Image 1 (cartoon, rainbow, N blue to C red):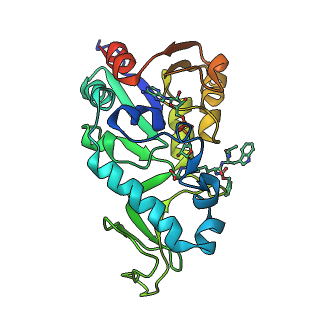
Image 2 (image 1 turned 120 degrees about the horizontal axis):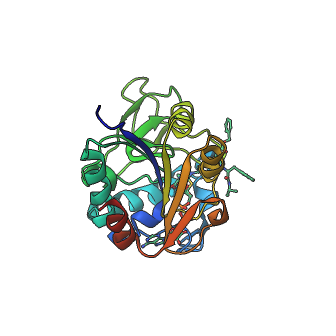
Length: 229
Ligand code: BV8
């Protein structure tokens, strides 16, 4: 009788991309130049100044495209390739380093720098490297283009799928996130309530560290390959 496959749900945050040179939110003290991130990563911020918000995301898209996946991204792809495990990566990150590191089963719950969305009709298409609000929508032609990013106050993507997978998992692992933003920060509680084992791999204790069965602290490029291998 073949051993049962172990189901693992992995939540990642900005910390897994830090060693690829992509700044985390905390490292920038929640600031981008002289703007609070909550001011640019919100629908109100976009309404108030669409070009400023596009500039914020164009800069981050350029940083993401210039970055390389690191040993942590690559180790997670190795784990998923092992037939003993069924791995789902739920990332809060909007970069594409998981995919470029070889992972296939990835949910971008906060959207992606590589998606464009029409604020008027809801159409989606692949984002150009540099995006402007005036870029006409390929569907409705209106000039209301925004990055396909989930801002504060907006509903994250594919939550039902995520919660279902979380509750059916054997193990929930949180990597590189400070545990400050909901609903992602609540996943450890959802997992524990469903009897799922929980592990935190983070540079330093997150806001939710006491909720994990086990916490290991250090850089992701050391912790993740050690855990995977
Ligand atoms: C929603 C896309 C409802 C944008 C992002 C009060 C209480 C509870 C909740 C709320 C509240 N007030 C408001 C809310 C809701 C709000 C929220 O949680 N606010 C917080 C500030 C309190 N949440 C929302 O608005 C969410 N939506 O609730 O919708 C709803 C319901 C129905 C219908 C409609 C709506 C949406 C939140 C999504 C916002 N978008 N991202 C963008 O990227 O520009 S959030 C953004 O910030 C990131 O995606 C990420 O989620 C978050 C930053 O978190 P981290 O990834 O953890 O990054 P951070 O820098 O904080 O931490 C890095 C960690 O890595 C650190 O711990 C560090 O130690 C570690 N690290 C660093 N280097 C390394 C490392 N680890 C390992 N190795 C290293 N080398």
